[in-house]
Image 1 (cartoon, protein in one colour):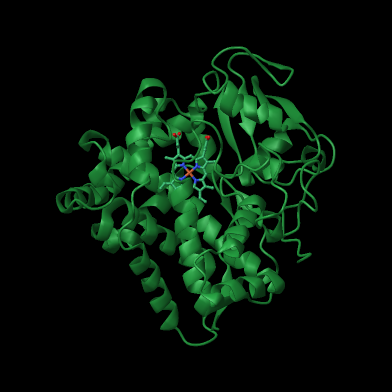
Image 2 (spheres, rainbow, N blue to C red):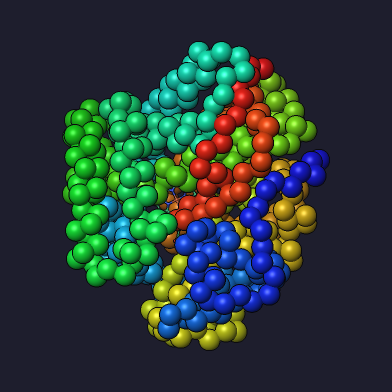
Length: 419
Ligand code: HEM
């Protein structure tokens, strides 16, 4: 089913000079990959005196993320420098003893039931139902709002509902500062100056979040009520910051791909119309969207000491990169790697080779929001796609790009119709 090949940025051929690579990286992290990187076993680069190794084999990924996870526990210093003013010792940036203390309570709280997720998704359906037939929806903005509403419900219970627009605006302002041209300036500054530059934005976010936490804890609702009091603010901000773009990216990619592939869309509608509680097709569409457009297309670790990874010597201090963007489209491991084929994830289809599919990372630091994300996205797509269709407006296909997270396009207008 479906021979649709959704858009990707152009891939260069052969080696390119480091200066050109850096220029591409500052525009989009999806532009740095040459054609051969979707076939090779890895790449070693020397950039500004720093050794970067891109691991592109399952055995190497297993070694970095699982068997030698202790050696590769730390995130790169520049990333921590940009995120610590916002997240403090929140789970994503915490290391060592701080991370070990934070992960279990947050993981346990994430496993709890989310009160009223149905209500948040029903509100989204009601907003679409109120629009005229054929109205234009700007998909990226709509999914940012939907993702924020879902995460605020998760974190704060009903206390979070009114804050979505304000938090999206503040999170957006922070993200703009730490990406694009601003990113290079910040990376060149010493840490105290970075803290000074980003401190005001972080403080504004805390000022909105802290009253929500107080209300949620008083009502005993939301994930923050289940966290130790001294961790609640940092974790709430860290979870929102990590989850918001990624969840909205997944939802946007799913709608976009469904609009591109009418056969898949029809199969999804058949499943949803049956009213069955098991929804393998919905799940498969989400998994395939995560494969083709992984919201976190690249992540990195630092080698805290010299190591041997799948036969390659990794000197201490090297940056180890894992790129779901490459592994998910690697010609050795996927049939028709660039085609949208959700059937590859249907029950009974051969499983992807171990360590080739990792939209949520793997090993001890894998995404703490994975199960929640899949649950919430399935519920959102199932509820909305049962009643509505989105179709792409005529015009050029979007070209996805990535900073810390992948984005299909800055804006993506779609036509909304009822089914
Ligand atoms: C489609 C949605 C999502 C994707 C693709 C995604 C992907 C990832 C990936 C790849 C990592 C590992 C990064 C690394 O190893 O450096 C990660 C970690 C993390 N994610 Fe997600 N994520 C998603 C949604 C969420 C949500 C909804 C939340 C929170 C509610 C969240 C919270 C976190 C946190 C806190 C970590 C750090 C965990 C740790 O270091 O112990 N993520 N995520």
